[in-house]
Length: 116
Length: 116
Image 1 (spheres, rainbow over the protein chains, first blue to last red):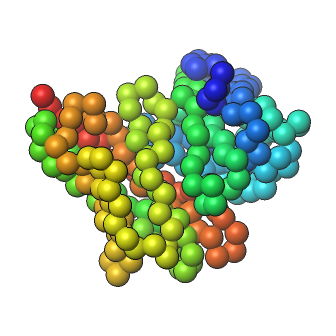
Image 2 (cartoon, each protein chain N blue to C red):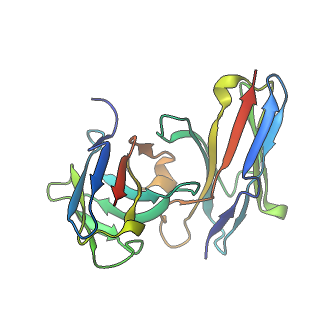
């Protein structure tokens, strides 16, 4: 497709389980971002990739969160030992260059994670 | 540290009224970028505008206009003759650029309801 694709759109899991959320960016976009959005809040930065490497992972809340982008395209956000507080919509965005230069992030529709 | 404040949590207007969404930002950088995004009920964030810190000229795009004032660190967004389709959550965001472009930091958003 032409836009950023995220799967699954909805994920319900139990506390303590492991989850993976996938993001397929727009073809040719080198920068990829993960954000987390809790109810009634703005998107909160988690990590971004420039190519295959994580250029800034300062937003990851703790070591239960990890993300990879092995071939510089698709990215997977991995959450270990999920907690109820991890429940949120996880947004992925891509851009041709860093957002401040290119001017626009293209967002997916998000993956809604619910931890019971 | 960069910060974006959207003091209006929710606004409700009647169709055809004008409405202004406020955004106040904090940054120590001299070079930075400001953004507005729209998040309709579908959840996908849609880019509306980017403005760099050296360009204080106001911008108009159809029914949308933006007022950037560095003296008050504000970047307000006005919708003229609002329509029901304008109902969404609107986010203001900031990216600092003095030491390389930082990922966007978002405000908490303003939920706009336009009533027919």
